[in-house]
Image (cartoon, rainbow, N blue to C red; front, top):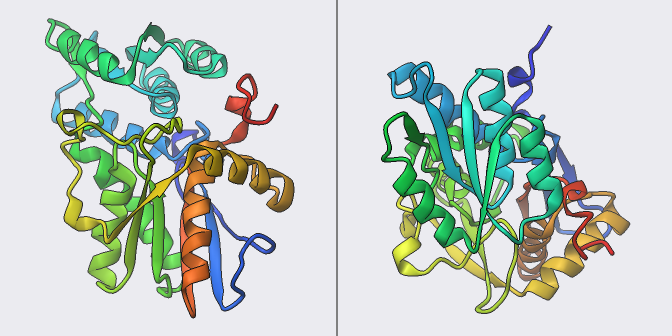
Length: 290
């Protein structure tokens, strides 16, 4: 019988049958909301905690601390509870109530501050205190290695090695860094496409980082193309995905899907896979589906 941790990864892919504008191109969504914690962040969270334990960086009584915009926090809270570890999660105060309550349900302490940048500074300072361990998903190589070891191989396996384009929203950039490493080793011509919000747009889970907060794991050369996503387009596509394709996910997924469909319209042929990074139910108290 599998435990919860054994259910992380091996998520399904589903083809967009109605929204795709080009029938010579196949567009697939990889449904990371099917992970037990409800998002793609289960993978990195498991890698970061398990590998730190194996290295002896986390000892009995250590308190984990991390800044998060939501999905990583939920995943970390779930996995910390399974390993009987205490954890404090620091989130922007505009995060949806569902996220806070879910983390607390797993037993985490949640601290709300003004912005993700302030959350990162707070977590970094407190992580220097005796008894605390900062996971630091923005600079932790176990973040992208989770995707090098699991997500990338699944993309290759489930497309029979025929994938031509991979599209992912960029937050910590762990997903796109790990998948790019793996897929380029298999076929260097596969195009890696990252999505970021346009100036002034707010899309939960992805950021247009100021230079001083750019994740240290991000290597620009591993992304072939960056597409800017309007907030309105991400919202509209998230709603369309639910109503037209039956894929219930959040705004960052809407943004990645919007980019994938624009890309499909440009191509003569190909196989595009984009990351549907979480589930829509954690946005019900926002106006996304209102």
